[in-house]
Amino acid sequence: MSEKRKVVVYGANWCSDCRRSKKYLGEQRIHYEWRDIELETSESKEAYDFVLAANEKMYGKPMKKIPVIQIVEGQSEHLLIEPSNVELAKALGLATEAASTFYDVIIIGGGPAGLTAALYLARDDYEVLVIERSTIGGQAFITNRLDNYPGFPEGITGEVFAENLKKQVKKFGVEILFPYDVVDISPCHDVKDGGSFDRCAHKKVVTSDGTELFCNAVLVATGSNYRELVVPGSDDLAGISIHYCATCDGAFYKGKELFVIGGGDSAFEESLYLKEKFATKVTIIVRGEKPSASPILQEKVGDKEGIEIITHAEVVELKGENQLKSVMVRHIDTGELKEYSPDGLFVFIGLKPNTKFVAGTIKTDDRGFITTNIGMQTSVMGVFAAGDCRAGATNQAISAAGEGASAAIAIREFLKRTG
Image (cartoon, rainbow, N blue to C red; front, side):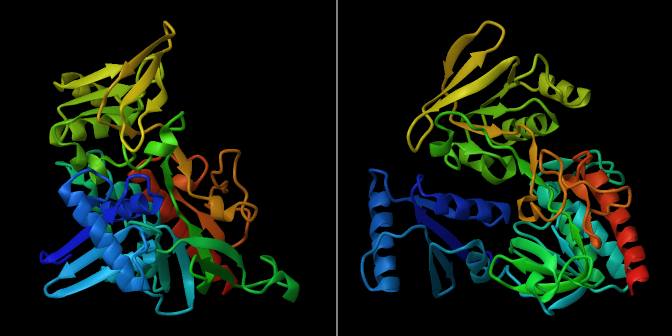
């Protein structure tokens, strides 16, 4: 993004579209200024008046639709009201449109699995389109640092790792389309016209804006997202005081105290990052009797001043409206209920697969992870799966990349057989 470009988001903490827009900007590493229109300050009053004026300019009357997003570059100003992620991306020069309607392979998901598969296939001269709903690099992009990926003895930040992957696939001609959701995979002909996966040679991939794209093979590499904290009060505070990405939202908590929920590697890695960069104190809440994080991470956390671990405890309620006031924690050993007052919570309590769009089309296990054979083939011929959305995946960047390579080889053989 241009250094001269300024992005300002006007809205309110209760507004789900405001939270979505801020989340998207954070994922794209786009700096923005936040203007809350409901605070009792002169700045907030100015923001409120700006929202009314922007709505009147857009709709001809002083409506109160939010968020209003102001993009200023040089002498030009661009106003967006309630934009979708696609509209926002286009305004920022991020979005692309597919150059064609037919590809050899369409890969859904731009994380390590999808991009590695794209690299292998493109090097074999196949035409490849990668569709990503959010951020190129997936979970790896929003990881503070990768210290266990082979070939980087000093470690590498998730952002640099993801950018390197993107440059590498672009070098071989891979086309990337984002930020678009895929909503359906189907045969190239409708059922009423005799279409079926067994009879149709091609697959149809439909995006959320209705675009229909066709291909010979599909790879689902949509990864997974962190499971949400679901307790009384969590809905009201989601995106306000509850967060799932330390690198996206940690900067809002400079000089503050934080809770991190979870006992695995992600929780411990992000706790270290939050303490080193922003927070004065981090308290890790672990539900089990002991953490499941790797010994080396537990040692690092144990040696880090300002990080406390509370085991055998669970968050049972959040209090506060539009701002976190307190957290109720039940200590499982004693049954005692204690009230704490951190400024925010970061949650890392496991993953759920991004596979809702294939429900009823491709077989999954009882948790929604896609089942495959050893060759990454799903229950639908010509549709493959790899990475964290696949049943049996290990949720590591290196294994996701390995699965992407395996899937690419299997797809190559499939394309050779089917012509």
